[in-house]
Length: 387
Image 1: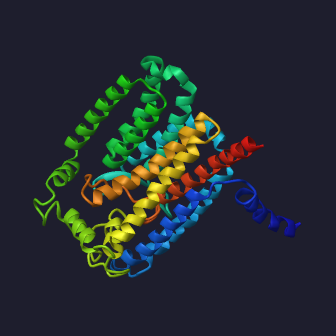
Image 2: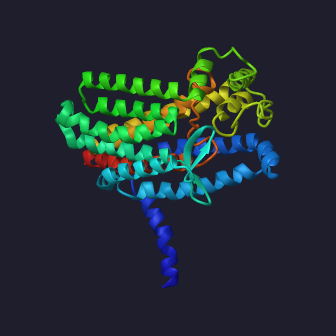
Image 3: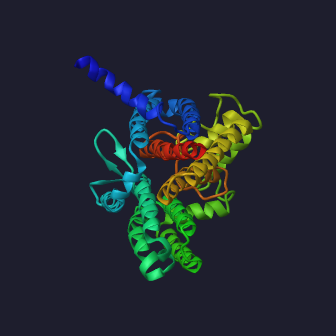
């Protein structure tokens, strides 16, 4: 009996991954990005780890722990039929609201860098907004399909969706988390627009979102400083704009081929979170334009393959879920890269699969698992069509 039980787990994994027709393209892209991330975290975090924790490998050890958790969630994402998620769309959005509310309660939510975005679970800290992103996409995907053509009617179609969407967004703005608020609003807008919501309603929604973001910026001085710094990056170079200027120097000093792995000068405490938020700056410095372009092309390919899987999926729900998760990953990369090269204000959003791990890494890996699950039916449809 023990021998049979011992063979069940490998047999199950073989059935999940090798006996079913899955499009592995997104998986291969993820593996390459994760590998680049491991190399860059080893290069950028050793000095910080040794200085702050007397352990040069402190961050890579924690990153490995998060990767292992990510693998577990990835397997679950591939194994669980994505259609089952429809049943937990509403409970999921309520669960997200509860978690986001907890971050705002003193003594429960952890405050760092002027924002309450984390919950302490003992061994790890989690960032509830990363969990909320998945449930928001799931809720939108389910709602768009359920509403059908009635989504073009504001009172009975779009308004109920917006009410439930507004609550977690308001809580995220209260943390405050400007970057993720804009990211979620952008993905939501694209999904609702794709779901044939009324164009006039959508522009009204955009106006309301812009007003909310403006109020958030005015109420949070550090966000206002970031906007001012973005508009005038060369003013106050030794003050509030110091870090973005150092990022510019890192990006520019890499040239075409880079200074070489481990040869970054800016990683020695010139940049904040050089192993996380500003890791792309070091990629440019050590790997040059060639490595930077390669990383950007990987995200571009992920957008292409993720969208293709969504478009060829078996149902409308599969399309919106797959497309939404793809947009989350790629737009997050766009915002991070755009911020460190000066196209966007600094937001604190990590680079998917590459930045130092945490809730973002685990959920990003999970999203790829869900995309692979959607691709199972895509492959099946192709096979059936050929017969």
